[in-house]
Image 1 (tube, rainbow, N blue to C red):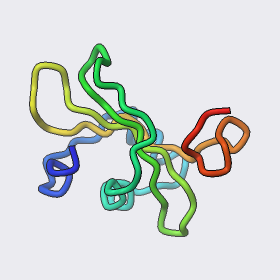
Image 2: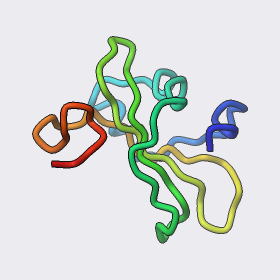
Image 3: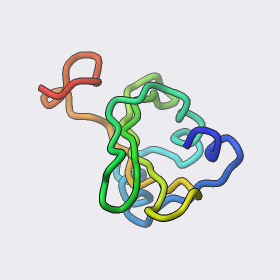
Image 4: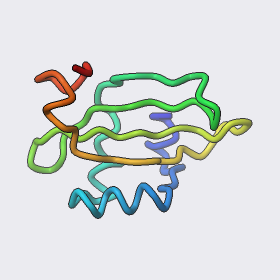
Length: 98
């Protein structure tokens, strides 16, 4: 997934764009930050393998990004959503659910 993102082989779902706008995030900052930590992997997800990533926005605040590769394909990466994680639902590192 990271290699595809580095080469620009990425699409953002309509839902993804809505979520970015809702949290005041840009596609550029989300795509630029995908080199950060993998929080959870969903390798057997029905629509294709995907991951939940923890990254930082341009102000250094945490963002969760979910992206994956459509089932039966090897590209592109589709960014499904990006959001600011709720501190009430995550530990202080934003890597473990409460």
